[in-house]
Amino acid sequence: MNSRRLTPLDTLIAGFDTTLRQIAGAGQSSSRPTPAPEQDEAATLTRSEAVLSGRLMRVNHAGEVAAQALYRGQAMATRDERVRDAMHEAAEEETDHLVWCKERLDELGAQPSVLNPFWYAGSFALGFLAGKAGDDWSLGFVGETERQVEQHIDSHLARLPQSDHRSRAILEVMKEDEARHGEKAMAAGGRQLPPLVQSVMTLTSKVMTKGAFWL
Image 1 (cartoon, rainbow, N blue to C red):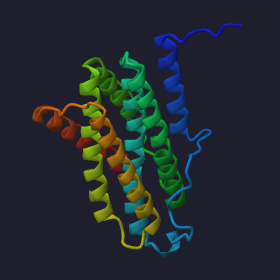
Image 2 (image 1 turned 90 degrees about the vertical axis):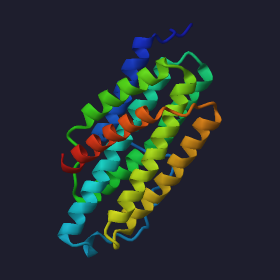
Image 3 (image 1 turned 30 degrees about the vertical axis):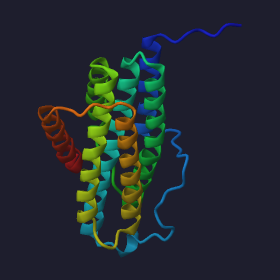
Image 4 (image 1 turned 45 degrees about the horizontal axis):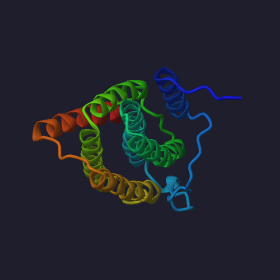
C-alpha cells in the first residue's frame, strides 16, 4: 500500500499540532534528562526570589516556543531537503529546552506565557519569510538568532537569585546548545545579516521578553 505524500498544508497542520501540544504540555518528553541538580532548593528561595525566577524562566519557555515555530517555518519554506532536515533536527533538540523550562516553571509555581500562541504565530511567519529569502539567508537568520539568544541567557544568568541552582544549570546547558546551533548554521553556509535586520531582530526580541516576563 502506497503512503500518501504530504502536501505543504499537511506539513503546516502537523507542525502546528506538534507545537500546540507542547505549549499545552501534552505528551512532552525530552531526549536528555534535565541538567538541574537533583536537590530541590525551591524551599530556600524567598517568595520574591521564586517569583523572579518564575518570570525569567517563563521568558525562556516562551523563547523555546518561538524557536520551535521559527525552525518549522523555515523548514516549510526551503526546497533543499538537507536544510529542511537540519531545521527539523534543530527543532527536536530545542524540545529538550522547552520541556526543561516547563518543568522548572511547575516547580516554581509559575505559568507559561498566555501570549505563547502569539509568539508561535509570529515566529513561524518570520521563519517562513527567512526561508523564502534563500537558504543562505535562512541559515544566517538562525546564526544571528542563536547569537542573540546567548546574550539573552547571559542576562538571565546574571539576574537569577544566587540560590536558584536548578534554573541556572538549565540555562547554562541551553546556552551551550544555542551556541552549537548557531555555529552549525553558519558553517552550513549561513550569510551574515545586515545590521538593520539584526537591529529589528533585537527589538522584536525585547518586545517578546518584556511581554512574557509579565504575561
